[in-house]
Length: 125
Image 1 (tube, helix red, strand yellow):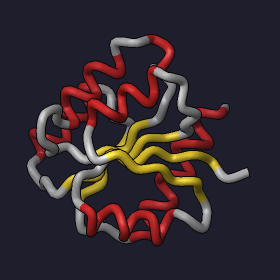
Image 2 (image 1 turned 180 degrees about the vertical axis):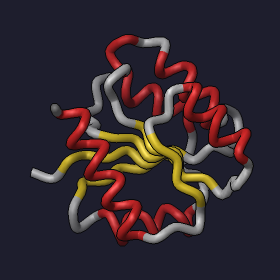
Image 3 (image 1 turned 135 degrees about the horizontal axis):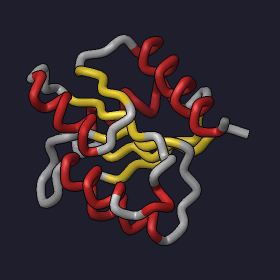
């Protein structure tokens, strides 16, 4: 069975790109904002990993990380931040807020897939 991945991304081009590269190995679902992502998870949506953009309207990725990590049932849920920010402060802030990994756009799809598999494997162990 393919591991379910939740993609939280508001750029339709990036969503299409991610779905193209991840759909062979993972079951992807997509939401275009962090508030809907939190609601889905709180309602019990089965997810093995979240791929999260940092900069979105209403609630950004940092706020999502902080809100999600406040709930103990999500402490082991791997979150990979995928961002266009090359700013070291953003990477540190995301990791300190609870991200498990950080990949800068543009990225190598094979590297992203390997990172996703590693995070899922570690969380299952």
